[in-house]
Length: 233
Image (cartoon, rainbow, N blue to C red; front, side, top):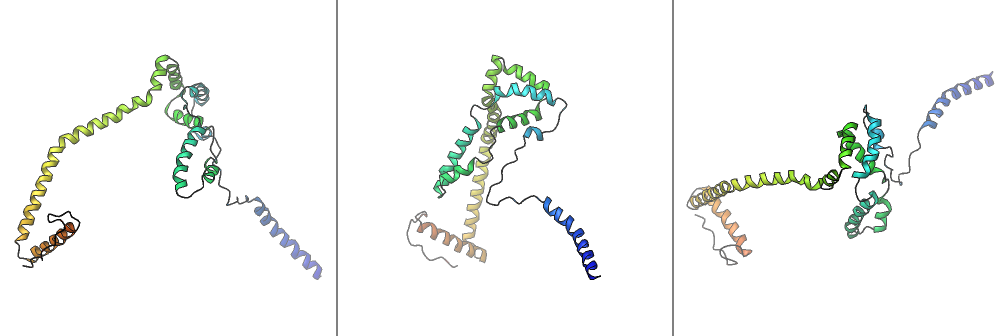
């Protein structure tokens, strides 16, 4: 009888433990904390919003990208960045070998294509990209694209012109305002010199301290000369 009860209890415990063990086995293993995480390798193209003309756009972009891609490869761009980082980090006592060892982890050689695709996809339709491609293939289009960065400076130069013009126009007004403030301050200080109230006495003590500091530094009217005792009246 006791054996039957023991068998029954063992059977119940097995039923309870089986799902728990199954759930535990489904848990993903915890990555080694010492290994740096690798960036998500999924293409930005796959994560981009779907458009009705996606297939046509992707086809056109394959022909378009070689004409607009950066002159330097992704690796060359990364190496320039790492060289600049090494210069500053080695001065802080960090081993340059350690910098190079981890600097390129997760660097996707196809990132240029993916990022350009993503940006153009958000701004142009397949039809517009085709028209742009046709233009870039012409001698005039190649010239315009080659100087695009120089042309984009027109906006910044215009902003600088507006800022310079306004600043020049406001300079006399600012000068007058500053002169009035200095004049008003001097008049206030002159009035406080003869003020026999506590406000005037406090001001004279403050000015004495200021002049003492300036004279000790050789910046005051008396250079490094000894300051006369303050008038307490």
